[in-house]
Length: 377
Image 1 (tube, rainbow, N blue to C red):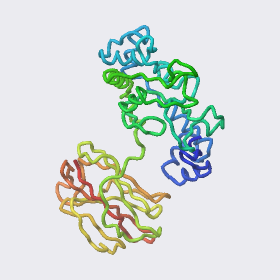
Image 2 (cartoon, rainbow, N blue to C red):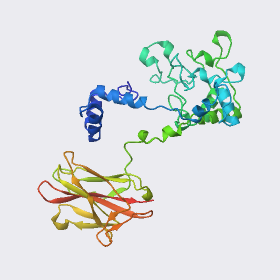
Image 3 (cartoon, rainbow, N blue to C red):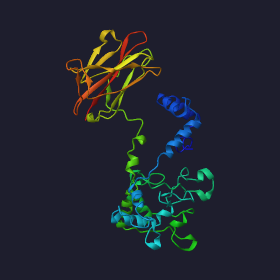
Image 4 (cartoon, rainbow, N blue to C red):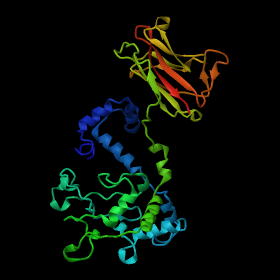
């Protein structure tokens, strides 16, 4: 299992459960999926398996073309001449002018063949890099690795089990003239001859390599790749923080602010987050175009670091911090509150705005987090 494999994640299952339990992000997701927030190894494996099964690709140009013909050997009407050439080189055996690629990348999904893992002549002398042998202990499995699907191959560099090739051009050049001899080299990669023959030399022309790459491009499923449900659920933080000497609050830590989403103003997709807040206390965000330093405003324990003529309290963001001591708020960049008439303004491209979290302390006083500054495009 990749989670426990020493050359992959190298964790124990109890460590995985503990890591997930430490992330408040997962609590409502486990409740939604399983009825309560309990994290177990069985639930984790089921959730991962269900997600992986959902990663299906069936809307590439290859799929569209295949639906137009009776068999994959026919030219696809939606392909260029170069793409059809690459397809024929991929599927046809050498005696028919092809390279027999489909023997290993089998079927019309170009996936691992029924025979399983194979040795493709990529030699590694590292004892820790011997493929299936590390699981079976069978010398006949040395250097054998699972054959990957070629779906979306044009956008999944680098290539080979160890990522040694940065481009498809390099990869095909290897298959053309660089396959190395090995006791377990797959027979389909040997030329005819005594003792099984030497590694085959396909000696591809540059035109044939270009045609194969053009064919591989038709296996890209842009619909799947751009599906929001497969997007990163942990968007990168943006902007830079300042006023990082925020006063500790009653949690024993200083509150911290961050932003995720998009810095493109017209996208209107920015979320503020504040963590390390006292539990179950009123909290909100403030924003403005200027960076200031107002020490202990109104007797606050912390410092106000956001200001300017359009400074405003984002009243709609007022909420309780809950038992997790954190809040988030989706900004409306077209209707930012200000302290002067007309009391709202829009954030547009080229503007820099600064944000900070204000919150009540458990003893009734108030405090501030550090601040984040964001330049909008």
